[in-house]
Image (tube, rainbow, N blue to C red; front, side, top):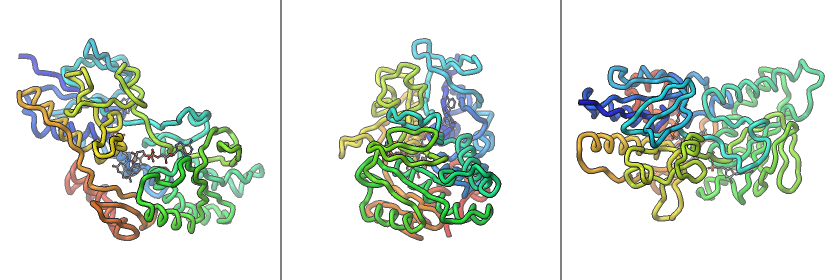
Length: 400
Ligand code: FAD
Ligand code: NAD
């Protein structure tokens, strides 16, 4: 009898947790499980603000997939997904492979949302991937390296703009404020030459988050030299820097884009019904009218019944979806009921650089050392889920 083909697209949080759980729960002769990913490594998207600013080596955020998954049980195909052919039940890759599936899991993550602002792709650092942040980090360092050696050096060379004061923008600027004094020292740059701006369209930084914690974060970052421009949408990015909606121009050689995300372009290219690249999935995580396609993580959209608004896409949800998805695939193969997915939001903790962080866990507000401790524990817990104590020892973070 032919074994069904289960094909998982993307080795991020959703894809890795699905693969790990299938590896544990599916007998070897029950299915052929294939994981398709652009690289032969998995990386921690949630840590990328650190290597982007240069406070953590990019190497620390990634690990070989072969060290985590059992290659006897899961076949890794290192390739880039171009498109899903839903009728033919095949995945097409950039190198021209065609992978047939009986059950498909799409967990390809997201890309930056520009909201149509021109110039982002050309002039801003907008890729939150290992490849992307390595370039951001090198570019930032280069602005300092050329300071004492380049007669054409201009003021804007040491101006840094972060677009968006969501969690990504805030976590990144927190790291940058930690990195700048080090870079000034290394490259003999007077600290007062460096300017850092965070520009936010909404009437508050971290819109919707606890106001007291937002104030704590802003005060702390302002004390480290950050200038916030709140309620000021960016309307253009160009060679000189950014232009705000009211016409103000801010010159900067470095613009880091963090105004939110949209689902991987493969979703729309493959013809799934989507909003900003995200598919509103059924309760069992399948795409509407698709009995054989599960969509997870940043490519999926689920509604919070209490607020009647979509949950913000997070690793927390992607990982929980991976567990349900693996159970539901097993049920489809072995027979049995499919489970409904219910997210269990444990809280939100954001780092601010150094030993500082803010967060809400349960109904408790945290800041400073206790929030920092919690953040490091969250980071280590995920390593534990993936690779147990060995991985925590190799890649883990000290909570103190
Ligand atoms: P990802 O984890 O992004 O994985 C997608 C995978 O697909 C990647 O491995 C990628 O290489 C691969 N891929 C993409 N395109 C292709 C293709 N065409 N072909 C083949 N492979 C492909 N969330 C939290 O819950 N807590 C946090 O503290 C937190 N911090 C964050 C900090 C930063 C700086 C950022 C940017 C995000 C943060 N998030 C956080 C959000 C979180 O990272 C995402 O919600 C999460 O990564 C989504 O998981 P995913 O499985 O959908 O995709
Ligand atoms: P986001 O949508 O949370 O924030 C983007 C911010 O950019 C918003 O405040 C928005 O008002 C602003 N913005 C939009 N257009 C703008 C413009 N033209 N000019 C200036 N500002 C503009 O997006 P994000 O911060 O990239 O986060 C993406 C997802 O990842 C979210 O779901 C977030 O919760 C999650 N995340 C979580 C953590 C954490 O838990 N520690 C960290 C990072 C990201």
